[in-house]
Image (cartoon, rainbow, N blue to C red; front, side, top):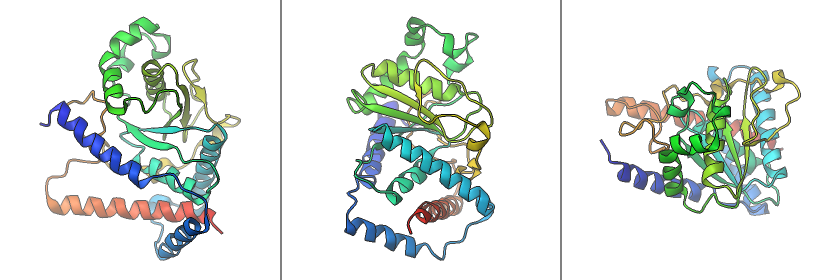
Length: 278
């Protein structure tokens, strides 16, 4: 098993690579031509059964555009997606931003491995009712990891944490409370990409988009499924480090097949996002 320090090094290297791939985009003619060239290159990519019908794709596209519009409107500087399942959603939101370029600077994109399995969500006391002192004690390790990974990156920033689906809302609440406690000078927003009923609200973060009708936000999140349990971190399942993504596959054939499947999924998401370009 890798040590925690090795995991942190791997994460930092991968994060540096991801940031290099999502640098701020200037909305000039050269960039628009690059995007149009990418759109043309994806013309022959076919939507598979995961993407279901045209209506499903339309709803997903509209929802993503609404989220991106609000990120711009609120001048969000850092977007954090909750790992295990939101990697493809993060990729899609980034593509939507590219397809709807404006004078706004593109925010940084990061990932945290925070989910329902975390210890804090298993307490008898509801997460929203845990007092600050108790919360600080039980999240001491996670807060330390967050500061070690991101350093000063999240300080004095407008941050939005995005989860791709709301079941009870505890994962997003935990992430927002943790970030707010680690970076008290930052303004924290929260957002669910999809939900089947009105999610919890909290004094610990602001909802990014106004919730008018729960049904409007219930979209096909199967599009973002990686067909795996998500982040695989054998050294510390309670870690908030996202050092790897996807299943642990036993042989090279399985690994290559999985990589090809995810590449195709990203291509379909790119094609869908770039439909916003005339």
